[in-house]
Image (tube, rainbow, N blue to C red; front, side):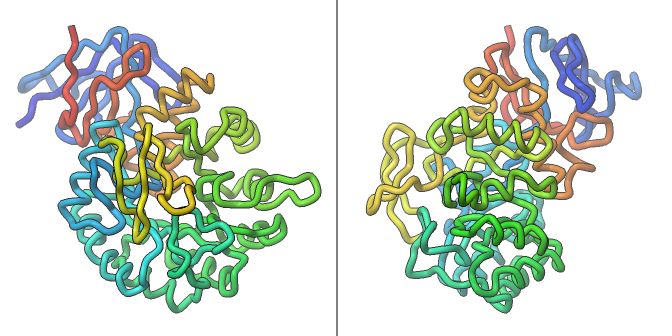
Length: 385
């Protein structure tokens, strides 16, 4: 049996607040509490004085990493991408597809469903093809289509119970009926890549939509006479808003604005990462479209639209604290607890509480990643002096 691990002396961020000089005990794959439940067997003590101990990160929206694609790669490609993000603190990841031929998306969903069944990913997010050509971003316009509930159902069925979320332009024909269908099947309906008016976004939420896909991006900007979907999604307590905190997708003031209006319990940090995350600059494919990554920013070769990100959640965490000035507890909520709750997995992940999976991240006092544990095993072992 693996030794009981006692992590001591850290600033431990719990749902009730931060405990200085706190400790967490890991027995097997789970958190046991502040002290070993038994003195029998070996005990491994790790002194984390001067460090932060936070829950493992949960990414709702991620297209790949490590040079590999979740949206079109093989099973081994997906696993390599998962490992890449794990080394950056993401212990739970939803694999996001991009717009493609419907039959291809269904086949690919079947493969991703097998990985979800094995516990390698937390499910599938379909971003496209049911989105607006007016706000297509890095999606192939020739493959876009209106959200026909029958086609939505085809993708749900192809995921074999592992469809977690689908992004829709709900103002398109069939949009509201598709939202209702998703809700009936336990799939999160997300409003995104949308040209909706304020009133149309309100109707989508009333129909059951509960997520704003990368708020501010790929949707009409706020206007004082046409407040648009941003206002509707921020003001409704039923909606969780995704934010890409990489310094490219959002101005810090926009992030602060979202936190002020939604509050930490309705914000989920995501990466929207593509293959280059954790890998480097160069040419990549995102679905059917070619992407150039330069200085860590991904843009379409044709049209120059931002094409996802190269973000990892450890960088999003550090930026949120050191640049945006958010309290650490708020960042932990947005990067762990809130997305876990949205996925319906908060009984197992998202916080450092006894009985939950031993998924955790160690950060130094500059908020640089030091170690990562997933289900009681070190993915990145601490190298402490």
